[in-house]
Length: 285
Image (cartoon, rainbow, N blue to C red; front, side, top):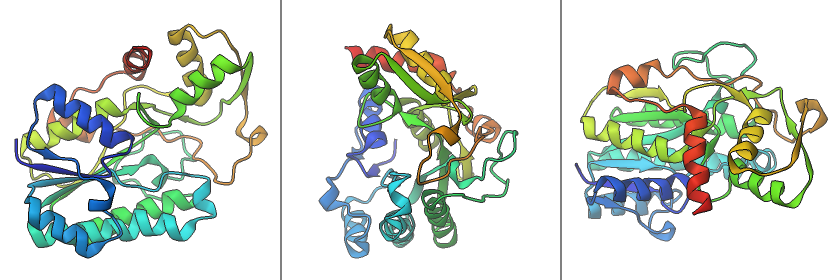
């Protein structure tokens, strides 16, 4: 496989990419420390790519604190939009193909339909707006790009919904979980495998792609599955989103159509609950 460099290597997806690279025997891959791959240092990014000479860069660096982004708009915009533009420019200057990770939160999510790549992106929070800005920056600067939108990312690494539920389930007897926001959980290990599959294909079918696990669920049912699989005894109550107000508005329905990525790269996508079983098994090791 061609040489790969990962930006945002210390985050959840970055750690999953490292794990999957080891499992797949991928050795031509670089995971630079954050200070050596600062998404906001345009000159530094260019120097890094010139030095390492990768064929592909995977951008996992992102501001993902959805509620905090409502207050930290400038920082969210800098990392998700300006940083993406800097990285795309560095890729262009060094002849590198970029795989840029985005989100289902670029959609309004007010219609119950599978969301296709060409559907109108209409974010309803700052995080979604800045991630869409990053997509536009990459698209406008760099022809050789794959933008991969994903949703509800979790794994055995970093902070995420699964690990939070396991922690709260061990501490409390009862939890209230939102039941009227629907989407698809995505095991970051599966996403990492899909990213490497795209690279291994050597395809030039550049553009936007959707990737999440298969199936549909609510946060309530996701939580129930976590507790069932982990054999955690806790009462879970379904509540409407209005009963748990947050600074950032979330899409009510953000289930993505994965037909394009499956047909283009012949990718097999696991069902969300099967992947959740695999993740919880890893967490319990």
